[in-house]
Picture: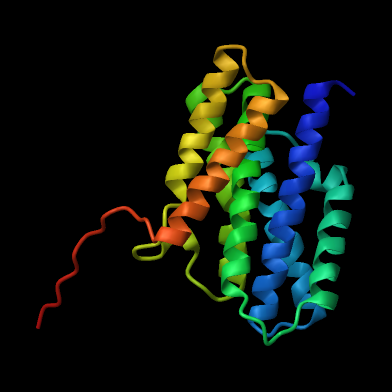
Length: 211
């Protein structure tokens, strides 16, 4: 296994675990049983990657071929199930683990899009879909408005798009080395966490009520 391939594997594993934990925490927060917790963890961890693979024609999708992804997601959900108390405040941990998964999968998805010969902008779009897809499915199944669609939601798509474009730029300049890709993922995570901490968001339309 080459160093670049190893870095892709490591990024994917980190993203799977982080998103699975965010899904399991969201399920626990909603009072779901063990089946619901495991299911939401797997869907959150693999949903974005499945959407990416379908878009670029990489079928069968990776999660159904590399079954370690589902196994890792299941194991991550089990850790949450047996270590986290239902009474704990879980909203912030969900957002933090979601931020980790977001940053990792944006970079991983963008690079896979480039590997499949997509135009850089197309690869960037695929990277964003990879990053946000699992979280959208998690929120929908948990009966919540997805983060990216919430009014005055903290920056979510913006750091995703910036990370994807940065990964594309690094690749174009021949600098898409493992350390650079990890740094790009870390930047996306940092921007997202900063947005959560300081409540940073894009200006929205002012709603007016009409009688």
